[in-house]
Length: 87
Image 1 (cartoon, helix red, strand yellow):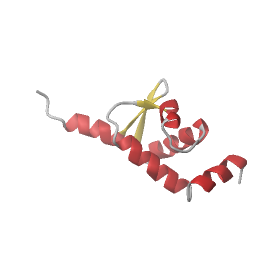
Image 2 (cartoon, one colour):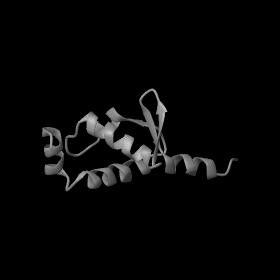
Image 3 (cartoon, one colour):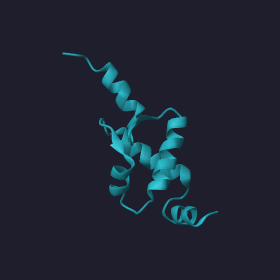
């Protein structure tokens, strides 16, 4: 296990716990976000690489969508926007 992974596991029980916490945070956002935004809002320090890798994992599970140019959005936010009645 690499040095970074060791640090992550000291802060979080495991990668899945970190991923769950990150998903809970981003699912409450209805606007696109960046990796830098997420890193800056963590209570404990995490690397941009860890956040990027976690987002890629969440994307493969269909839980977030990469918009390009460094922006992401949760699938939940996209669905809620689509279902929102247009006035």
